[in-house]
Length: 486
Image (cartoon, rainbow, N blue to C red; front, top):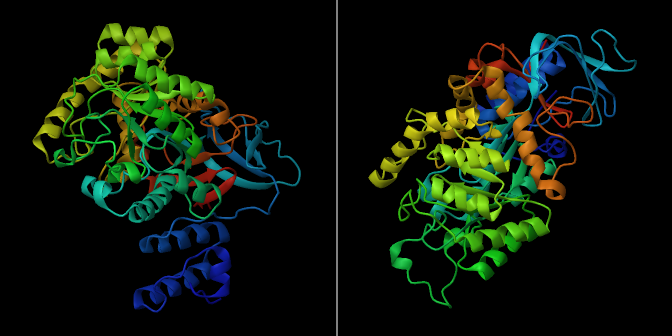
């Protein structure tokens, strides 16, 4: 069996032409051919994908069953994404991209293919509720200045890596992710499901205003900045402009709207304590989103900004590490979601060379532990996110960031924040949700996104730090993208 990137077979399978004549490529092809002769199909396919990973090609679907034939996962311990315990008395029947049933263990339906999970834990596909698909894998300088085509290519590469880390869904809360989402949904690129916000809407001098001082003042005839034309952010002042920019993102296909309601770490010209957008401006974004059946989430850290956002009708607070107890109590009373990240001053912190940004980063990290304590104390609905930004190597820490939550709560509680809880947050998009079906849970009718893991989620989440070795099966929508079970 000969394999070539330039062959008709490769073209039909979606493998793009690459460095076919290069010695290292030919050596890889010989290794692949040897592996295919000595491995069973499922294991061999996963191995082939691993060999291609060095060339930057996205992982492709591993076909494990005949088209249309039901698939049964058996001999497993199930975490369903909601119940904070595991059960071993059911199997998982998958058909048509969904969980068809949870039949009693050992009662195999007729005409199904079977995958034996070997007693391992099966969990829902993970959800990162605060992700930036086009900003995670590049430096801040590149994000602010590079040709947008380069950003999209880098985002496509990162999307494949995100999926292989077990994150089958992300809520993209800022950036031009619409094209990437379309490519993934059409099967042209492998990656997670994307709930896109589009451009982050910011006031002048707000957290989404990355212009340099020499670009001011902005006059009526001044063209939009690069960061605006690339779709990363949209600057709006006053109710009318906020309405316009919000509606533009909805027109593009936003599943929710992201506004900047307070100072941030990455931006140089807005102190962390600043309140951004007047309440009536925020309310304009909320009303425009509600007219489309969806909601607004807000970047904000401080009590003043959080309370203003809640009064305006914002449904999800992004970050919030500097909230005080009265503010957290208000979040709980109003049923507002807390999309929170383990911002700690450790090796996984987003890189900051500027001393102003570094000082703000330390201030946020000091509030992180108390924020988790207050959120749990008052019963605020909380969902996990990472907010990995401007770091080529940062994406690799995505699972490790989730594992850190076990410092603040039991492992299954932490896992719940990235599965069932996050799925309920995504459901706030209502009819603007881009996917028809429940996410973050393993229950009848839910979309068949799930993982088989080597590790015990009841006792620890350390296995998340080694997705290549510990995630034995990765399924999205009933399709297998990795399977190393024998």
